[in-house]
Each structure stands twice: as structure tokens, then as C-alpha cells.
Length: 129
Image (cartoon, rainbow, N blue to C red; front, side, top):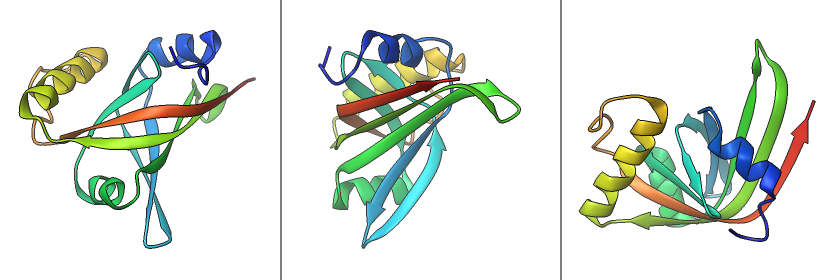
């Protein structure tokens, strides 16, 4: 596990599945979009396509924000900063897609057209309410 991620943050990110918000940037413009993710040992895996994927290819510096709570009233928030890598290997994409889908309780091959992006977490912050 990376030193940047505390035991508390790791427990929150590996607990019940939540939606993450991936922030990317290209051409000096931010782009934020919701997606599913999987965290393990200082690395986040996401499957994505479109603008997010293009932005990561142009600028690998990203952020992932995750919040848990009800009706806009948060119990906790985690913000990760890191460096993303697009993984072009078809077998790795398939395995990661199945792991993420299993976490969210959906069919193995759902979202199979997306591409794996791995994020090496450089820093993490947490706030509980």
C-alpha cells in the first residue's frame, strides 16, 4: 500500500461501492465525470472512454473524488490525486472490467467497450462528517 493512502481511506474505498468523480484536464480545461472504480494497494482502476480517455492521454494528472451519504448529506468524502496510465492490453482490460463490474454487482461483460485506466495514487485526503 502506498504511504499516501491511510488505513482509513483504504477502508472507505474498498467498502460498499460508491460512485467516483474523475477529474481530468486537457487544453487548460477541466472535465469531471462520474464512474465506477476499484481501489487496491495504492492503485485505482477505472474503465472509461470518450473525453475522459482522451484527456488522460494528453495529461495523466488526475483526481478522483468519492462521497458517501444520503440525499446530499455526506458521511465522508475522499479525494485522491494521482498519475493515470492508459492500459492498451486487451486481456488486462477484460480482467479489470470484470473486477469492477463484480464490485458493483453487474454482468461480467457490461461496459466491455471501455478502456482500462490505472491511477497511481500520489496523495489522499479524507473528511468525515
